[in-house]
Amino acid sequence: MAEIRIDDKGTLSMLRDLVGTLRNRGPLMRQIAGDMRDAVEQNFEAEGRPISWTPLSAKTIAQREKKGTWPGKILQVSGKLAKVSSSSDNDRAIVGSNQPQAAAQQLGIYKKIAVRAHMRKVKSRDTFEKGKKGGRGKKTSVGVTPVKAHTSTMAIPPRPFLMLTRDDIEGIKSRIANYLLRK
Image (spheres, rainbow, N blue to C red):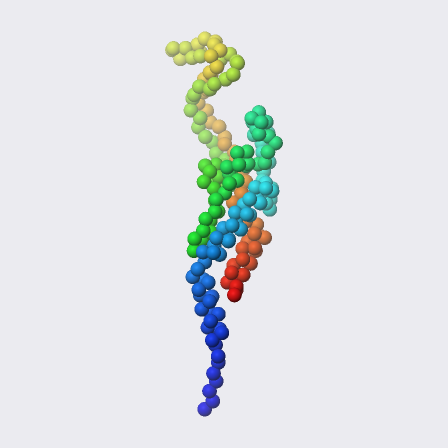
């Protein structure tokens, strides 16, 4: 009877190393989180990639000019939104923003909103103050004017900044392969 023996010590050693690498994914996830944060920073720098973000509306530009914040980059007036955070653990890599406007800018909004009646401050213009019995009242220049209840349309186009391009994804895949095959 013939017997065949295979020396598989090298293969078993390599498999043990691979299992150890798969158990300790924390360093890999930390690197991936850094790669994703870099990609998001590139999105802000390019004002959208691979597709450019929708330009600002004329109204927004006029408001920025009035405040002295124009010209400037889209989504970066205060710089808070562009300061994305990253975190990781053994199972995941996360990049995001805790800013309240982040979801609206990422996904966009188009909806009607109800505006309650209120008083608005105005600068150097005559306004009408309501009379005691609900009439129009007298003309005054106190700097406030009534605004009737109405609806307004909130329209913010999506400007996805938390996204990866195909090249970003390929880079992450390459990082994973290198991590698994490292010696």
